[in-house]
Length: 513
Image 1 (cartoon, helix red, strand yellow):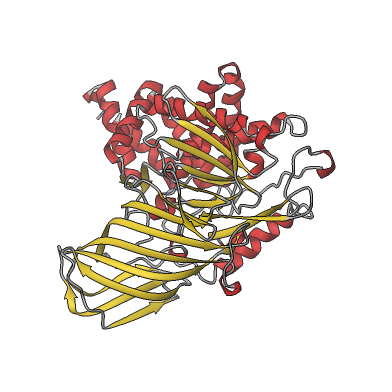
Image 2 (cartoon, rainbow, N blue to C red):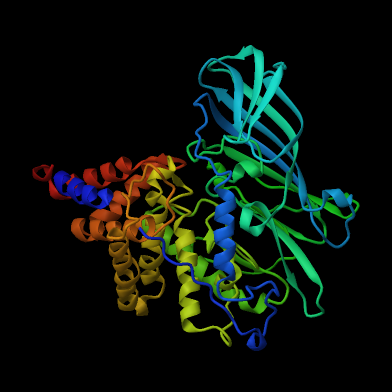
């Protein structure tokens, strides 16, 4: 069986044309709740936005790796965003910017003369480095390389291997249009025509460095404590459940969220806006909330319930209960991707969250359920266990694509046969077509990340094939072992294959080694 698993895996790994993005449009005259007036003006407006964003990003997105000099332990992050909100006033020059402060505790892994972090498009106000006992480490100069998106703090006293240091940086950053990620803004118009703004974050794969200086690679996991100072008239959300806010005066409040589990930088998230919600509590006593903007309240309950049930079934299948107290599904008027799996605060394009049964079709409901279950699967496959680098992106996206349909069979048991056929139609057939296209590439792709049909549909189809070959029970135990072995850490493809091979020997005996 060891040879069988390896052979099956190798066949799949050795060998995509990206699926064309589709934008669901609605007849605004027939929609009962208030859609944002900034919906695409014509069918390919969203595609055009994506193309233009990709062209801009090609100018600054870099896969330049950090030198392996530091390991983050813990971050304390503080943010104050400035965007039009009732009840606050600020200098007009600050509009669509944010103040930030990061304090990151790191361990030095090698002797060096500098601390190197990822950072992009910040105005650095001040910085300080100290040892764990509070002794200042004098910084003699700094160097910022925008082509590498790296900030170096250089010291003549030297960085000593094995020492723990605190790096504190105060800076300002930009709140971008939604196409450029990092911290971004969007808006909706109310029935009176007034525009209401909101902000959120989108950091995968290389945009956490637009939000805070840090070690912005998936293998540099750490804990994070986030504090937001925000307009009191708004709602603030982040990965962890929000506590009671403190009023700090002049129309501002402050929230310090609980510390996160150990996680990758690109999964950090926060949002501030005029949000409203519905909620559901599943059988694991986890609260799932669906968030929209005023006017969408009555259309959020399906998302809250579907998310809660998918989350519960995923916990049952993996044997690992969702480790956070809540899982938020936030629908935004604009979002460049379909959704993003931030741990505990998943952000979506609004039509996957606000479901209006009088104007939206069964197919729209199917799409919403599928996308939600995809993102919720990421809470284990991508968030709890994260690919070590983007060449193994299928460990995140292939699993999420597989489970987005598979886990619905346990949620909507009367649709089992239909959902099983969808896996063949939407994953296997698409994956096979991608595999013979001129853009085909290996599933483990050194030039990644590749957010395409090879990574998603072929990755999902390989997992379905492994389940069929090994048997559902063997496959499930192998997946559970994989998750338990790599929880709160990172994984490579060999880790998955080793877990499946080991459990195959257990079930089928040494003769299959």
